[in-house]
Length: 189
Image (tube, rainbow, N blue to C red; front, side, top):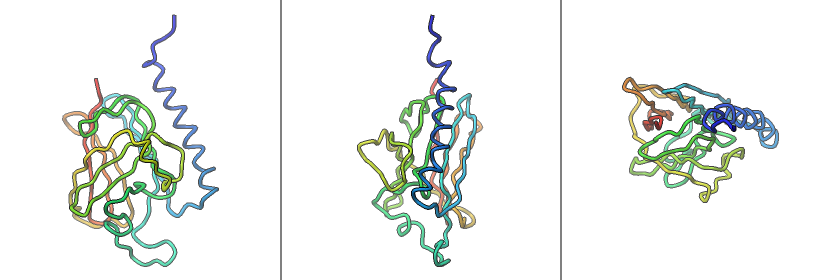
């Protein structure tokens, strides 16, 4: 008798993530990285949620000049790679409900689209393992609305976070300069 798929899903996702994360340096050798990279991971209500992303600075890496972030480096009305260098990876072991949309267990690329009116969408894209500017809208799985807030202090480096919420579920946060975008999620039962 074959074991059920959900029992093996965590190990399958771990293997996929390991192969993608180890393949990233190959991609980076083809194009030089300009920013440090980070992996964040948290178990929220029995599901591991992981993000692998590039962390650009407010200062231009070539000139050292301070850059305007929102509306300039991250343009309004266009898709942004949500970080630097390779496309940002998002992994979940179990299905999540993100902003009212069910995102199945698996690995996705994250993109963001900001608008001049302050609204923003987080894009879950099925294409993975590519350079961040190689965006294919046909591969979009979902677009969910983000909430915009002002930070009490300016952040020099782009930062993503996954945090648990006291009532259950969690929140994904994207912070840079004096702005934070976020979206809550729950683990689908």
